[in-house]
Image (tube, rainbow, N blue to C red; front, side, top):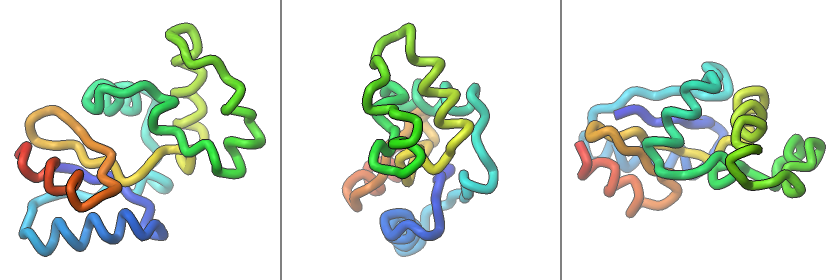
Length: 120
């Protein structure tokens, strides 16, 4: 199990605390430092069963600068969104946990973290 985090994020710290409390084995990816490639973002989206706009933090300053709220949300625009997430990783919703069964979850609640742990 791997968890993508921003250490400054309270939801990420909460998820790590719960994983530790439950004795879960996991690796940490600080995705602002170890930026995911476009292919890695595609892979995690497939595991999540989501589209790139579903995991984009549209309230971030860079999102507003890019005007992402106005971007089309269709198959033809998918690569544009993925490129933006890779170029500006702060836009990626967090934390994301990739589970051992090949799925992933955006783990913003304790329930979602426990769900990811149950998929090991």
